[in-house]
Every structure is written in C-alpha cells, then in structure tokens.
Length: 342
Ligand code: SF4
Image (cartoon, rainbow, N blue to C red; front, top):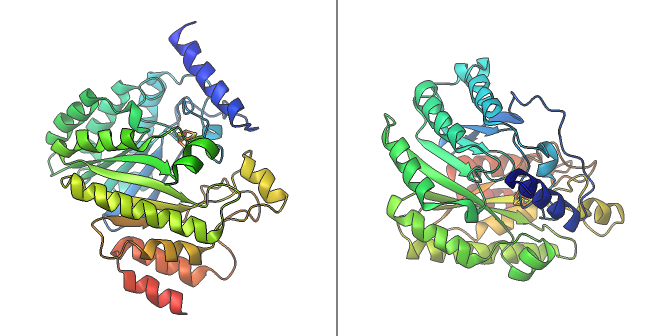
C-alpha cells in the first residue's frame, strides 16, 4: 500500500467509525480555496481562508462534517499554490490589503499535516502574505497538535523573522470539549491533554500563541448546565497552563455547536434528542474567564453547514449576538453582563 493509499484508508476508516453519511466535495475546482471571509476582532481585520485539500486524516470526530467540504483524494501542491495565487488577486482582498492584520489558515483539517497540506505551499503562502498583505503581523495555523513537528516551529520562526513587522504565530487546535470521556470516547476526538501540553512546552521558547477551539454542547446527552460547566473547566485548565508556560498567550475560541448535516447530531436533532445551546448559555460560559490570564473569542458562524433549525442562532437573539460580537473585539465583560440583564 502506498503512503497515499494509507492516508485515503485512514480518512475512510475514520468516516466509517463515526458513522458519517456525507460525501466528499470532489467536484470542487482544485485551483480555488474552499472559502474565505473577513472578520473583525480585537486584533483588527482578519482574513480567514480555508484551502481546498484532501480531507482531515483523522475524520472521526462525530459531530464534525468539515471533511465533507474537502477532497477525498490528494490535491496536488501545484493546485494548492494556484489557490494562494488566486486568493491574493481577489479584489476584496486587495482592497483590504492595508487593513488586514491577521490571516487564519485552515484546510478544514490540519495545515501542519504535510500529507494533506503541502509544506512547500506553507512556505509559498508565508512569502505571499508578507509580499501582498504587508500589515499582517499575526499568522494563525489550524492543526491537530500531533502534526506539529519541532522543525516546522523552527522554520516558521525563521520565515516570520523575515517579515517587515513584528509578526507572531498562533497555533490553533481543536480541543472541542474538556471532559476526557466525552472528548475521546463519545466525540472520538483522539486528543489527550498531555499531547497539548507538550505542544505548549515546545511553543514556549518561541513565544507562539495558542488558540484552543472549544465546542459548547457538542454531543447529545449533555444538558445546557453541563455544557456551561465544561467550558468553565476548560477556562480554568487553560488559565493554569498559561501561568505555567507564561510566554504562550492563550485564547479560547468558544463555538456554540450547531447541528451539522450528515453527523449523528442530525439524527439526534431529528428525533428531538438534541438541541443546540442557546446564546444565553454561551454568554454565561464565557463570563467565567473574567480576570483570568486568557482571552476569549465566541464563534458566531455556523459555516453554512447547519441543518434547518439546527443553528444556535434563533429568532430574537440579535441583541445578544451583537453583544457577543462587541465582546469579541473589546474583551469587555461588562458588555455581556449588561446584555444578560436585558
Ligand atoms: S474536528 Fe478537526 S480533527 Fe476532528 S474530524 Fe473535524 S477536522 Fe478532523
């Protein structure tokens, strides 16, 4: 079996283990990224780009349908390079070139898994960001922690040192849920906390930043209060990690879960056994971070993948959603407290 066959087998085995019913997006033009968009955050304007590559090798997390946006087969690095080139030429990117401060790189899987995302392309991309988006000083890379090799951390440090501004790297990892049993036995995340801690230890000398993606209420059977308590425990654990490795600033990205098509959540939702968390619960979860040495960002985008009625955004949520968006840019807990009192 070739390496390529082994990767494909891993993807298909993972998909089958999680009983996922979706199809891969093999019809997508390989010279175009999957999607890109802009966000406003505390760090300024963000360009978030999802490159189109072969799907996540793990592919097992039961409530994740992101691999359905990817190819089942390898996407050749020459196509990936064309995606970078295409992105930099887009009128809305060029028009914002002087305002974009941060670029988040994703492939809806692991960018540092060289089996799916080319290392050559990562180098090409860092070069092009420096060339075409001269005010970017934050680069964020989404990946599972086991794919982060020490040589990649070193290479990225050298690349960013050549940028003309004081650039910083962020490694973004999906932790999803703090409870070990739910994370690994129910959600099938396959992530042990010591692996995350080793990554933070390796990042500390470089003073890289860590972003941890958490899902609020990611599986059926969790009550709203249990989901809030899980986020509170994650905040406490990561605040402690930030104290131990004090050169690594930590951000928690809390995503209220939506019901993604083709996952077991869709079936549970259809049977009335699962409801997404409310934005009210998300605000309560996030408030626990007040006064702690970490920052928080609340994800309010269901990525267009939610089934009808399966989003965490409901009619009447506009004021709270606006408060959460303001909180994202200011980290002002009073904004949330005021919104909760209304
Ligand atoms: S959550 Fe991440 S690691 Fe898990 S299947 Fe989805 S893309 Fe892969």
